[in-house]
Structures are given as structure tokens and as C-alpha cells.
Length: 283
Image (cartoon, rainbow, N blue to C red):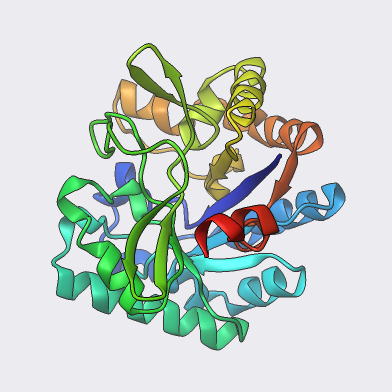
């Protein structure tokens, strides 16, 4: 079973937990750390001979086109994380369309390749924003990976399917949703494999969860952000719980990811979708 490796490319001041401290008109003035951190990940992926999908903000692509060119040259997929890291829940359909068009345009211009997929900031495709799927399909996207089948204070669709499914279909065009991985325990879904869940949970649990998920014939999706490997980033006062969520285990995270890459098989969303056994079911 091939699993899917993904990185949400954003700066240390972009996450929802800290973004209120940094208005977008101040971003250009902030210390940038994304290039150095992405370069570390590219070196790791090259050493492990794995390909990944990089969901890149349009803002980041415009500021650091070299990163997009390096990802593409190394055979990785470049998809979109939106343009300005705004949660879909905080945009109107018109605002979302404009944001998405801008990000797709700049990424395609730099990479020279079609953008196929999207991941919403903070997994903000929820029951009230599923209208965004129609916009994605209209703009030529082929997949989304923004749904978490859990309850969370910021996101989640608890009763969403736990497996890839067709979110929307128009004629011959389909938008496939790749929900984030969860373990089914009783009637509840428990998240694993990315972001804070990757950092906070023991590595032994994550390895167990990936293996069990694969046992259901499902690809685990691991995701992370470049700042989650950066021990030198500015530390912000966020309150006890938010600080723990945001910074816990950053110093050990790269080693955790390296172990997972060596233990399981990994690929990008694009290459996963091109596998015969997947395309026969969804094309």
C-alpha cells in the first residue's frame, strides 16, 4: 500500500493560531524561514527517494518562486493551499473563487504544470462550506484534501467518509475528496498522522495507526508544515493549551518523519491517483 506524503507550505506566522498577531499587510516585514525549512524537507525526501505533494500558498509562491521550481525539478507535485491562508469559513463564495484563482495562476505560471489539488487552510471545508467543491471543480481541480472526519473546535465533518470519495461530479468531470486519516474506535474517529497529531502522539502509535489504516486498504495521508520542524523560529505567547498544541515536540519531529518515510511506502497525490487500481475506480 502506498501512502500519501504532503506538506502545507506556509510561514511560521501564517497558522490560524498565531495569524491574529500578524495582519497580512505586515507579512513582508516578518522574518522569513520557509525556504530554509523546505530545503531541509526536500533533502530528506531525496535521501529517502520519496515524492510528496506540496500545498503552497500563492503568497509564498510569489515571494519564493525558487522553491516552486526546486519542488518541480525534483519530481514533487505542487498543489495549492489557497492564496492568503484564509479559512474558507471566513470567506464568501466570491472571495474564495478569487483567492483560489490567484493561487492557481501564480503556481502554474512558475511551475509550468497544471495544479490538480487543493487543501484548505485549517481544514476549513466543513458542512457549511461544501459549496467550495463546485468552485474547485469549475476551476479545473481534480481533488481536494480538506475534510477531517472528526469533531474539532476549528474544523471537521464527523460523519464524512473515511476513504477517498467523489465529492462532486459534473458530466465527465469529478472532484475526489481525500479525507484525512482516522482510526475508527467504537463510534468515534480518532485523527493521526499529521500536524499536531504527528508531533504529540508517540511514534509507536503513529506507526500502528498507519499499519491498521493500510489494513483497511486505505492510504494514510501524512501532512506537516515547514515550521513544525523549525526549532529556531520565534516563540510566541499563545496561552498554555495553544502553546502546547503549536510547539510540542518540534525538536523531534524531523526524526519522527524520517522514521515513517523509511518504514512505509510514500507518494504524492498526483502519482497515487495515476495508479491503475485507483484510476479504475474513480475515472
